[in-house]
Length: 414
RNA sequence: GGGGGAGUGCCCGAGUGGUUAAAGGGGGCGGACUGUAAAUCCGUUGGCGCAGCCUACGUAGGUUCAAAUCCUACCUCCCCCA
Image 1 (cartoon, rainbow, N blue to C red):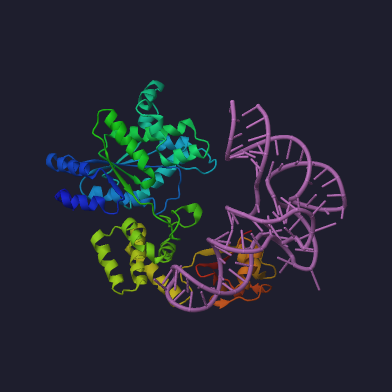
Image 2: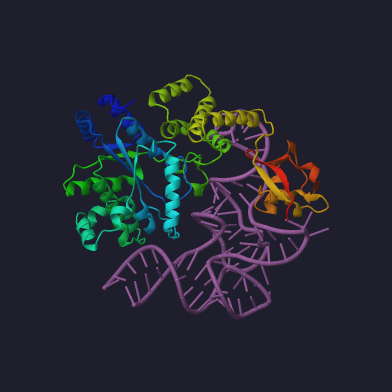
């Protein structure tokens, strides 16, 4: 690809997977101008460095950023370090600890590192919004805020909802859209990308730019990716996420477990495949191809992004062996059992499961055994009372349920 | 500032003195079936080496042989009035 791509081609790639492009005519005219002058567009994505655990949902806007990069435009990743130090209003969770600058720093590094697997961070511009937000004087803040009206701010869905529900709504929270908008002004952004939940903030950027005499940015919103349950928004706390740093096997497995119906959304938002290619695959499935095979392709594509093709192949093979042929996995994660847990060279099964982290409590361990969910090297454990000799499990694979297994090593120290 | 209502297990929600670790549903977990999909069915769902004991119905006290259920104070949320 590159700068040679025509306007229509650019528009097609840019709008693929997007929910809204506001307004698309402006997108087109900006592209035309860029093509004529050779001046790349400035495309902005703001990221929130408040959490270290990134998942493939966070990667969705990065993929869109990559499209712009492929088209030769200047992409900018804004690390919202200033914002993070204060807290984000769209996160309505209960009190959460205020992050220290060190934590924000470390999260930001993680983010950029992970982002590097999707975009070319070498060619991207990285900036922190504390650069221009921290030095603002109160007087300047007043000037900025005077560009917004309360009525307008209250248009934001979650604000108006919280207001009408009489939930607390801090005055400072009104300033987040302002800050984000100011980022766009400082960058003279042509385009800003974000999830549909960011629409208001993105539009605030347009308004502030216009108020300050700049050409307003185009706003591009992307769908929020549901988690592996296919229903709720992906999030670590709901346990339905596919983490960017998940080991290949786990990542592969999680992707194979998503409902068929949501597979195409994953293809569009979480892989680097071209829209046309995805369409072909979807037609094949409609014509009778086993959806399972399409999903395997999905899992491979995603694992390849984060771990490379060799690991993706390995994960696919392992997956087939374990789940299709029901063999004992080869590369099960190792769990250490402290030797002190053994008495007379044996250990109670229930205790073993708990010690290996396969059950949070002894009661749970019993239940799972009674339910027929535990096996050692493929042999089902049925008795909850047996004391096992170390030879019965040392170096072997203990499995709990279909998806969880560990290889036992006995840890001699202590 | 005044008046009224509500806080139950991961979530929703029954329960108004004992037989309640607490109905029912959702979700989770385990099993069957399968493609680690969907749908369906079955089991299970506080902890403890567990025929027993401990913890639990907003928080802290109190009444009682006995409390999620009654009383007091406090906290939080909701509704009406100012």
